[in-house]
Image 1 (tube, rainbow, N blue to C red):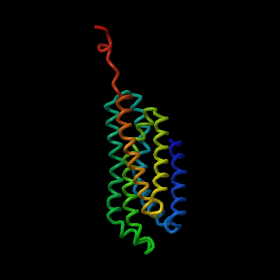
Image 2 (image 1 turned 180 degrees about the vertical axis):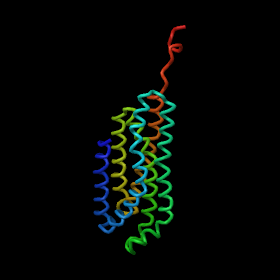
Image 3 (image 1 turned 90 degrees about the vertical axis):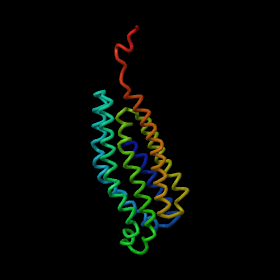
Image 4 (image 1 turned 120 degrees about the vertical axis):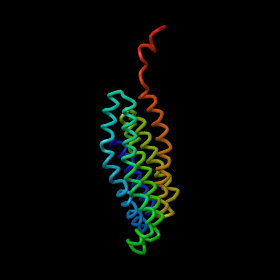
Length: 206
């Protein structure tokens, strides 16, 4: 998982560089204020998700597909629920929140609402990423991480002129594409890796 994090860090840094070059450092300040709220929305989800990968890895070793999927569903709920609980009020109160930072930040309300949506998408994909790693799909995990990073950079090139709101929109696009690519792949690999082994009666000749 360290590899995937290392893939994303340069992309996030470069997106901030694009924002500074195309919209000015004032917009970088607005986006940084907004991004801190994404970290707050994701705090409990990230904390809970730490236990997800060890649990799924242990259950995979037990070769019990039903138990594995039940644990995955529970992880999905536990990571998504806190993010939803925080993100929805933050998005609804975005104008008021950004007004607290000062008049120069008021226009960042839309960016805050967008980054709240991006945080929700990230929270949903957290346990899904653990599935991929627990099922030893290392190359696929790295490729999906590269897709995520590449999408952010490409979207940032397209939207950075829109200031903090544009970059927040790039994060939403990244989240949508990441979810659209990861969820179907996860269903496929679950069917492939967790399919119950055929019984002796099924494989024995008639």
